[in-house]
Image 1 (cartoon, rainbow, N blue to C red):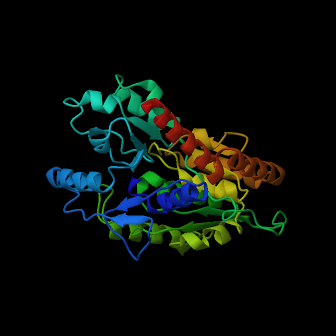
Image 2: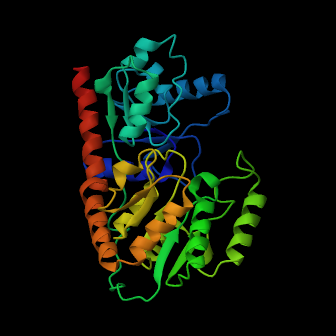
Image 3: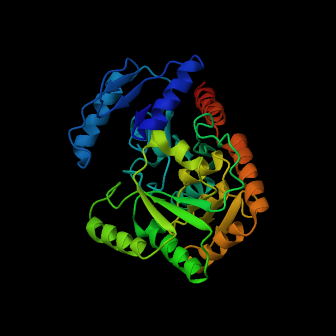
Length: 352
């Protein structure tokens, strides 16, 4: 294995070891020590010439392995085309370096995507690749870690709603605040939105403007509302406890989320999700069954969806149960690892 996505890779590594497979994780940076993880110094991830040096160093250390599973690492296909599995967890799928010159090597490699949406977008860009070597492997969640609250919260007078993530407009940060404002103007006081994250979570100054400006705008807007409470960044270890106190989750992204793992974190805690019809989200959230899907950049639609679930506690509870069941069926680590090993076996069989 090779690449980023640290938490996901570490869990995959443990899953492979648990099932009796020999696996090593190669990384450019390492904190601490682990016999299953090897560090290879990356001279410069921005410079392609240095990046080739990095991969050649990797190939010498890992030459005897049967499968090379890389996350966002298409250069692996040039080194080990028949044994490489290039994994796209997100939407950074739009370049295969030197494809025009080494098309055959890329055609002999294998590719896996976090949703059918990302796979289809990739297929449009590279229609000549072997379609049988393009596969979907959904992201997953630990259902023993993200789990429903033990106590019954159906009798709460105030409905708790959560939103969390990096504060960038494409995450719908302003749509949430405008929807709350719309509902307040209608006289609704029966809900509270717990608004997590910050403008400095993942981004500094960017195409969306400066983090300072975004931070100031959100905090100024919230100061005028009675139904929104800022809760700051939420540590991953504290997310389940936070979600167990909620009744509804919001994921109103306006850009095409490749998958939207926040959705399954919320759903695993038996909560309905109000999300948008973009990217891979409709593959995760089933409209009318596990939540409600709205058009992106639509605060009025978001307000209507919130009001629908505020006014119907039975629907809210039914969707929450269906959400948990969907996660248990499709998005568990057990399911993910089983499918991943099947993909590895397919690669090995093809080499015989």
